[in-house]
Every structure is written in C-alpha cells, then in structure tokens.
Image (cartoon, rainbow, N blue to C red; front, top):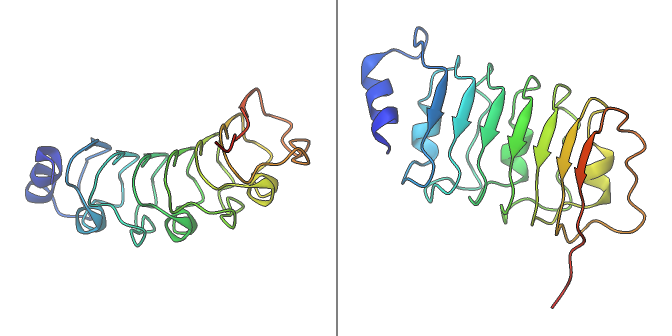
Length: 165
C-alpha cells in the first residue's frame, strides 16, 4: 500500500475525510485499499498497481471524476461499478476489458482511453454523446464498420488499427 493511502486511512474516517486526489501508480495497492478509500475521493490513479484485480469495485467512490487504472487486471465488472458522474477513465492495456464492456451508464464521461484492449464496435456504440476524447488504438474488436456518428462532441480520436502479427 502506498504511503499516502496508509496515511489517509489513519488520518480520517471514511465519512469525513477531505482526501480528494490519490496517486499510487505502480505500487502494491490492491482491492482492499481501494475499498477503504473515502467516498468523497475525486481523482484516483492506481495504474500499474499489481494488487488491483478484475474483482475491484469503485462503486462506493460516488464523487469520483477521474480514474486511471491502466495496465492492471481491471475488467468489465469494475467498469460497471463506476459512478455515473465519472468524467475521465483510463483503462488502456487492461487485459480484463472485453468486447462486451459497456460505457452506457457513464453519462458524464468526457475522456476515455482504452487502447490495447479487446474493446469493439458495440462498446463504442455504448459511449455517451458528450464524449470529447477517445483513444481506441490497437483495440482488436474495432472494425471498419465502427461508427462515431453518435458522438457529436468528439474532438480527439486515436483509432490506429489493431494489427495481428
């Protein structure tokens, strides 16, 4: 567990903690540490944390606006647990993200990085119309038939195709 997470657990009770941003990138932080975080947390970076599993839940983090969990075992169930007010999500290189993932419940989502995952056309179709930035490069499920027409706010798109070697 990163030093900041240990300190936050000691320094506050979940209901009254003032912690708004926590960066534990590349540490041993796991699902239990995430479960102990205060519900008022707005930004969380657990990218590269080897203790984050496909079973992690972010549902109790109701104020979460930005989540970085790239290069972890996060999967579709973790995405489904995310609060609808989330604005930025980075699940790039997460092997647990499948073609069946849905982002439809994330109505406030403005930025999504899901590069190098199995995300496909159906997942793109589930994206909210307010999405502004999308990175789906090397997503093996994206086909030539994918449509971004339902994303009128989209201003940045990286959709470099997946090439099987």
